[in-house]
Length: 117
Image 1 (cartoon, helix red, strand yellow):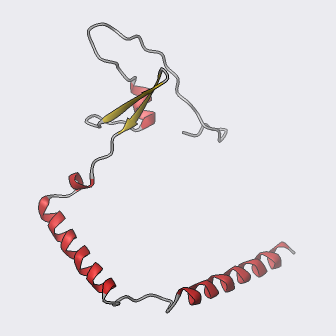
Image 2 (cartoon, helix red, strand yellow):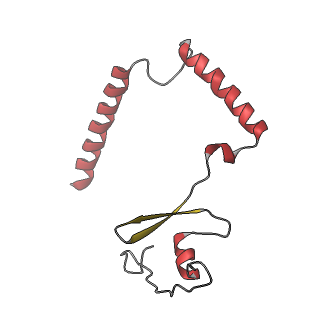
Image 3 (tube, helix red, strand yellow):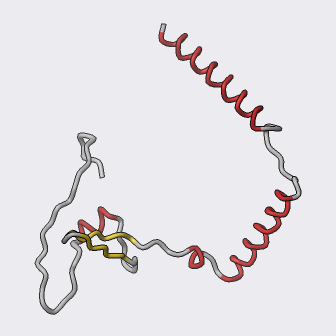
């Protein structure tokens, strides 16, 4: 999070670990970290330092079985097209693309030079 001066702002809070409940992450810390109710968190401990990392959902959790079936079928079709050479693009070869990129860089450099005068 950036402060009003444009520097990184850190939230530092101290909590007391109690006997009967788990560790509580203060609301301000959760908000700044983007942690929401229901999020899964991974705790990694190394040398007495605890890192809390949001656990991202697995790819299989993002889609319903029907959606996954449709996606897999489309990916299989696309892969077959690539293997058969049925692809299209703005360039016929990598060399053609590189030549185009070099010419664009020259144009930008010339424009930048012209604007700086």
